[in-house]
Amino acid sequence: MTLTFDRLRKQYGQVVAIDDVTASFAPGLIHGVIGPNGAGKSTLINMTAGSYSVSAGSIALDGKRLDTLKKYQIANSGVARTYQNIRLFDQMTVLENLEVCFYPADVGGTLKEVMWPPYAAARRERRREKCMETLRLFDLQGYAQAEAGSLPYGRQRMLEIARALVCDPRVLLLDEPAAGLNHHETAELTARLAAQRLPDRITIIVEHDMDLVMSLCDNIIVMHHGKLLFQGTPAEVQASPDVQLAYLGTANDIDDIRAAAQDRRAQLGIRARRRS
Ligand SMILES: Nc1ncnc2c1ncn2[C@@H]1O[C@H](COP(=O)(O)OP(=O)(O)OP(=O)(O)O)[C@@H](O)[C@H]1O
Ligand SMILES: [Mg+2]
Image (spheres, protein in one colour):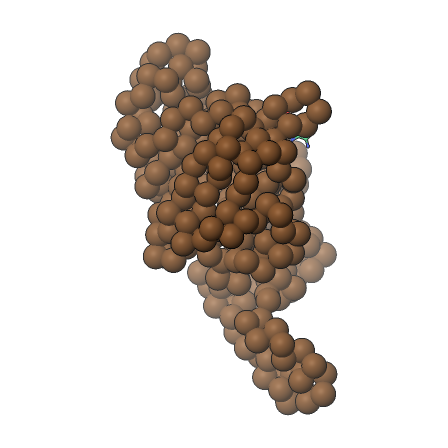
């Protein structure tokens, strides 16, 4: 199973957000996507999840085109995502946030569910168990009956990831999962995501937090002005003068890149606090 971008392009009016990007993502690995603001990182996620259409080129999973499918069909193909700005069902409970997204493997049983109440009850119970089990992965079980919108910001980030994981996706797309998290929460998130690195899962993380990216990702893609500037291991990315130039405009060491990324986190932290 491989996810591939082939000569991918996205244009918003005159703005070319993604320009001729070809890349492939192997299962069992965590792939990082980094790059300065406006580089096109979220656009890649949005096109893969079907939120945005593709202007040219293609996206395929296992050789099967995704970009010609509707958004729900892409989700049914095993692609799940989170958003750069958290999008939970604020008025629902934490558990309900997962339950509404849980898609049973035996979807054909819906008619049986209507016709036979014991079957419906057993199915509800299975769904609840699976959702609770997923909440436990993120230590959220204690919040199960709380309104999602009432959770502290850091827990909301975790909940959004748990929701994306509840259907055991083959492709997990995370857009800035550490945005607005403090150092401690980011370390917790890094550990929890590391535990979700499964042999048959492709994980793609867009992130500005360099500590998270460098410690978690096996492979990193560096985007710059919509183009794929560099692809390599964390060590290769850190050693690349091209990458340093892309971030800073001057060739410098990784500490400067980290400092730039830290500024970015601080900006987002302010935005996150304002939001709540
Ligand atoms: N819906 C949209 N309509 C018009 N232009 C857009 C839209 N979404 C993104 N863009 C533009 O496309 C380019 C890439 O944006 P994108 O959000 O993918 O960048 P990014 O790498 O995720 O940036 P950031 O790190 O700030 O989140 C930018 O120039 C942006 O202004
Ligand atoms: Mg973005």
